[in-house]
Amino acid sequence: MGQTAGNDDRYQLVALANTTAAQFVSQLDGSIVIIALPAIFRGIGLDPLSAGNIAYLHSFERILPKLGETTTSAEILKVLATN
Image (cartoon, rainbow, N blue to C red; front, side, top):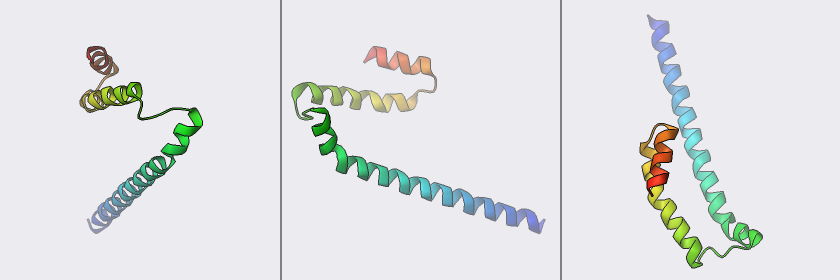
């Protein structure tokens, strides 16, 4: 019995460590992308504030939360077709 409780504690510690590391890496990646965006836009010759690009980003912004609610690729295609 005592060994099982120890394994549970170890499992919880490993799960917490993995979750914490994943959250840190995700935030670090987001920061790197935000910092690099001006250079990326210059490199591909894209003006992010032009009317066409803002409309594209706005439409993607509306679709993204709905994609989080879907579970299958058929549902994702249905959401993309309706927007």
